[in-house]
Length: 385
View 1 (cartoon, rainbow, N blue to C red):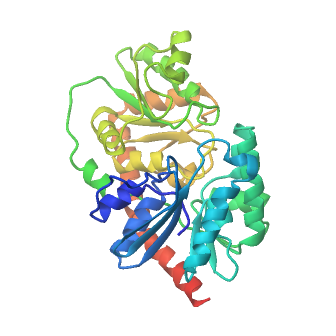
View 2: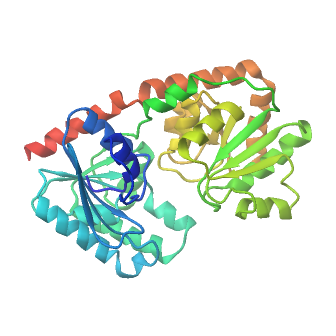
View 3: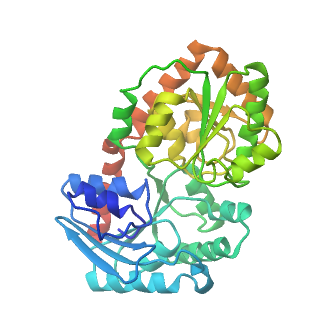
């Protein structure tokens, strides 16, 4: 596998100490997949990168072998990620795996393009949409890399139907792309079963990474202002990078006198964040305008929280079963979000029904036992090549 991963999490799952281990680049998509493949008895070799790494490292823990190269946190797009790509190609050529599974269509897929080695690339986002929201050199270079990968790679999966359609429309017309979504770990469902009751105001929550037009948090803040006029005791908790006290979201809201009733919790450790949502949040509001596949939405549903998300946001209709497992709103319109928030707040039976439908949907469709065998079938096909 050629992909970003949380190397500390992998070390712990293999019974290793994390001291002296590079952190990796993190990923809630690939890390659980590697752990589950190991649990099923496979041997996995991971080719990856990490920030804050002076020289390449190799670690071997039982059936898991990890090659880690240095990653430049800033400026890597200036020369097409070439040192990173060169490292990945070199160690892959030395190992000569039977096949390779690359994640994302950028430097990891470019590094995995080795002559004579069957390759699968998993599409995790929508490159043209990303460039539309972030018009910078880094995203432009990544789009060019995605085109190169589209030309060279022949086997693809995508995490959602929208991601597959985007790739077929803009990068590889007519391509056969199998949809295999990411999955939720069993731990999330276990956390949801130990919820504790608390006497607190009705609370909405957002979990967003980055203060940007793409994540559209301003619409959630504006919607909450409309809700708070009707229910002044209600609360909003904003979690994620850039949503800490004094951060960009807090400053924007304070300048407009829109911070009353809002807690800016910022980035929380993953399991602590899940427990915080479980115990302190009644409804998840996800105003994002662009997603290929939202783990945040699925995690909220797994925690038995009703989710409000964008009717036209890619990846969302599939996750919410066209509105059967959540509430679809026009997230371009803060009024539409506010109306959905008020409905869920004031109608407990409806709120409970949405939460139950969402929880049942992710429990049946996004568990490891239904997702990982789909990858194993593709792996068997690649191995036969």
